[in-house]
Length: 188
Image (cartoon, rainbow, N blue to C red):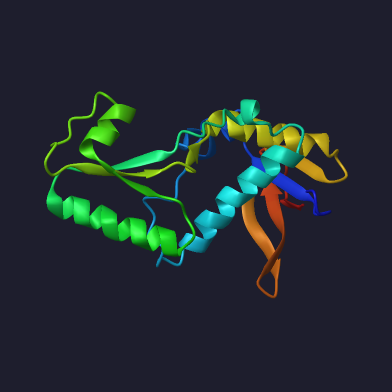
């Protein structure tokens, strides 16, 4: 929306926006557990960057509105083999530009006293830049942010059912919708 695009949301019920899969998502913006060699790695990095950008530039998307929790993430190891896996992961993450630190079992327990790690072979990998949001709160805040741009840039089609995407040369141009009251589908 910030770059001039128009957005339409098609959903049978407005409440579904914040309670269905979008709202029920765990909201983890974690990179520590992702495979840097995966084709999805750039998407995960980009997604996290977009959230950080939006939180500083869109009035309705504040850290409080999405319940931004910059808690970091902690991957645990309870054996020497698992510890070696964390060491390899830490190296890969560092090569990808992500800060991650190896911790001894005692250091991890100092952060989270309830952890049951073997003092001789346990350990952890801390990625302090990982964060979490509340999926429902984030979905509601994004919807509010879209609405703030006005009806000339945002259309909410609640009560309509998506029938099919309308595309041209592989690019989606719109969506064909249908409401129970309609006799014929309409194009949006």
